[in-house]
Amino acid sequence: MSYIENKVYKFASYLKLILVRCFTVWLESIHYQGRSPLSVIVKMLLNILQLIFYYITTYIVGAWCLLIQICTKRNKIIGIPSQTGKVAIVTGGASGIGFYVSKDLVSRNIHVFIGGKCKETGEDAIKEIKTEFPDAKVDFIHLDLESLDSVSNFVENFLSRNLPLHILINNAGVMFSPLEYTCDNLEKQMQVNYLSHFYLTQLLWNKLAETGTEQSWSRIVNVSSYMHYIGWPSLETLNDRSRKWYEYSSHKGYADAKLMIIAAANKLNKQLREDNSYVTVNSLHPGVIQSGLWKHTLAIHRILMGILGQYTFLTTEQGADNVLYVALSPEVEGQSGCYYDNMKSVKSASLTYNEEFQNSLWNKSISMIENSGRKQ
Ligand SMILES: NC(=O)c1ccc[n+]([C@@H]2O[C@H](COP(=O)([O-])OP(=O)(O)OC[C@H]3O[C@@H](n4cnc5c(N)ncnc54)[C@H](OP(=O)(O)O)[C@@H]3O)[C@@H](O)[C@H]2O)c1
Image (cartoon, rainbow, N blue to C red; front, side):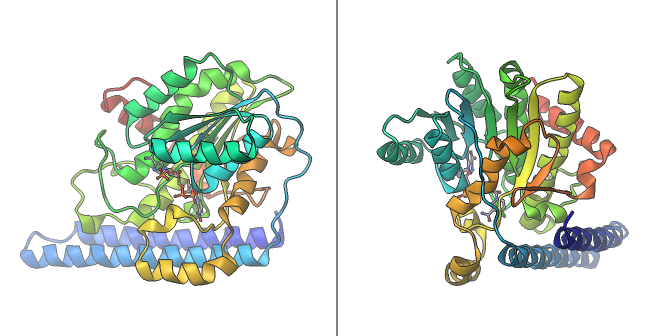
């Protein structure tokens, strides 16, 4: 680990310790309140303070991450061998980072399946790609990650084509969206970012294993975020429907979901190794990027970002680089259970390596899918 990565990791660990301690103290203070109207108001105020705390912490960590990005030279992908004949799926591949990932894969003669919730955006993306690469093999299949049924329909549609699957890129995401529940009765941010991708990976696991060979491993690439360093999900209350608006932090929800992505990937990696599959699974932070992801932030933030972001943030095209590195680079061949930032394997948050947490998360994820009336 380089000096700067070491410092970042230490800073994130300290910050998380402080955060967890504050969180526990607050929870305890809330728990011991009586039931008088005053105590209800106190509880509400404490919760609101907690939301402010998460809000501020998120932006401090975000600013720190941006500072590192500004001070660090971006690495470049080199030496990608021919990819002709390969097949890839990119969720959210019609816009943002996903679009440039899809376009690059297509330019390397990979048959790309874009999974997205809006048909028009998908068609526009394909049109744009085909203008540059008229012979491109690129298809759109409807995929709404807010619905587990949509995930299984997507997989059914893909499998009916009898194609191999070399690369699965779980890229789509939403950030800081307010508390909402999907048609599966699941909290939206958790389902879109984490659970639906978990389910998609489960359904495509066999296809990936069938396709991978000793010479050319199939790859599962999970787009997580630096924000996962401040994630600390409580599995008991993961989908607690009794929460009020002031008991839900969309900032914490995003960080938690991004942490769960990495923890589940590390658990999946162990299973893949036990099965002797030629499939790898890795996670990554793409960088701080100017994209549609920021639409749920405050207007003032978006205005500031529009002005300052052009000098400090990466473009969506640059944001695709780290994703493409993990999906294609020969340096990553056979490497699994890693977390990449700027094309380097770095340590993710300690909770992502915790076996007890990984196992509980795995079981909880399967039970959430089953309780929505679906099989694993
Ligand atoms: N931008 C950053 O600074 C940053 C930093 C760290 C990590 N990331 C991660 O990078 C990934 C890509 O983000 P981005 O910056 O490219 O953001 P983006 O421009 O907002 O793209 C997100 C993609 O996800 C798709 N999506 C959202 N909800 C969906 C749903 N319910 N079903 C299917 N697709 C859905 C969007 O489709 P529509 O366009 O149709 O909504 C879009 O294609 C995300 O996982 C994000 O968390 C981004």
